[in-house]
Length: 87
Image (cartoon, rainbow, N blue to C red):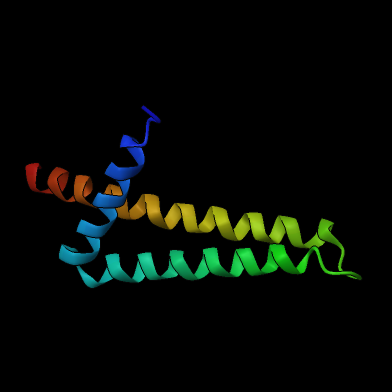
């Protein structure tokens, strides 16, 4: 087995969050998608002649990290909601 169960679980959690979550969750997922897209574009521009990759690679990495924080926030959102209801 390739160990893809974790990725499938995360993907299904994100789809469920998109379909059944509040508008904040959809906005966070949309922001993450835009950030990843911009990070890919910035990383690709860094490989063009005349562009210094030492400048573009950290920018792309920071955008990707920010996208990851958005996704982790979406994944943690249901757990935070149940904890608040329990208190």
